[in-house]
Image 1 (cartoon, rainbow, N blue to C red):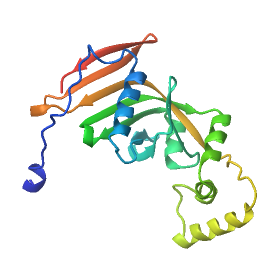
Image 2 (cartoon, helix red, strand yellow; image 1 turned 90 degrees about the vertical axis):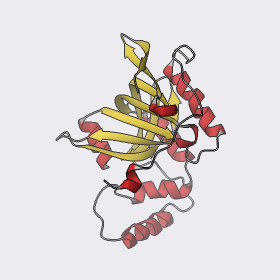
Image 3 (cartoon, rainbow, N blue to C red; image 1 turned 60 degrees about the vertical axis):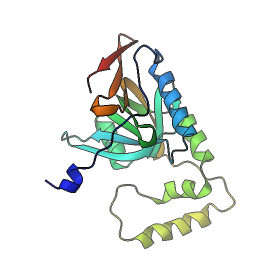
Image 4 (cartoon, one colour; image 1 turned 135 degrees about the vertical axis):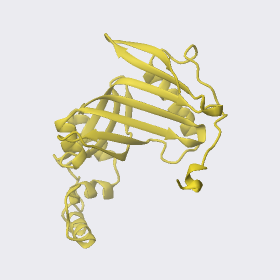
Length: 213
């Protein structure tokens, strides 16, 4: 065992979390924590780990950016031909994790993913910086390419082609919404006796319960 790694530890002592004081709606509770994370000046507070599973049951995970929260769930955007998109098409069950170290907080979410309406993908796409819009056209996400130069040359060509024009959203790029069935809020506590409050959807209602750390 590497003693340097094994000896890494930290006591969590900032806050508490009680099932009697949380909001009965987990989306509202998430918004509360998300706003507190923004006010704590955490960089890329919307960064989340998205875990998917392929057709052979092998998991994969990556960081994506949350771009919307509403009563449906949690939204993000990506290339529909990417590895993650192909895995989502084959198995819509996903998991999300947010970790806000400064606040000693973690949120874990499981749910079912579906495509956002075309109108919402269009609206978000056209709100992006021009470079990001062109980048969506240029990158064959998750595919093998010959070199960095291939990407850069494609970017120059597309930039020229779209100069002075509105850039259309590629049909192969758009949004997803994850409709949650479980949302767990984790608050670090002293001596590893962390607070864990889980919301579990049952018959259309949210059940709130405490989990052992």
